[in-house]
Length: 229
Image (cartoon, rainbow, N blue to C red):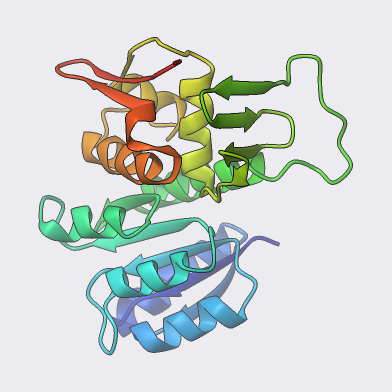
């Protein structure tokens, strides 16, 4: 059974949302503050984390950053404000996506399922044989093994979150071609509707820091492309 950790200080929301997600078949663990949430994330075996931004003890953004020091578990931030600095800080801190509270349960479940699909995709079955279309792609000092789902920079392995890996693979499948933000939202985040382009921009920033700032170029007014030289 898929295990979720919900960190939410509002007791009513924590209880009602936890029970609602259990009805969707998820095994729920909950925490009421940031410190307890961080401890639960570090000691438990969870497939995805739901973090509220405003938490007592240690805010959700700080929790996210600390988790990212040791884990690439999918993280979905929950913010009461959709256009504030909370969202930007959360995504910069390593969150994969965010929702604005109050959120409709079907929308939340759709986002959870999308993140879980990315995480499953990023973990190939043990002992799986590479398929005929899988290859090691080279872009300067950057190496992308599409079979083993491994990325190396100058020979050293680069640790990417499932979303960062999906984003890089999307670029690697279209080297030198400009990809619009809407295309990336659809193909990487599984958005079937208009999404927030900040999700793309901030994930690109995180990816650049790991694989080289010069490797992903901005084409102003259009989107991004993977540099092939």
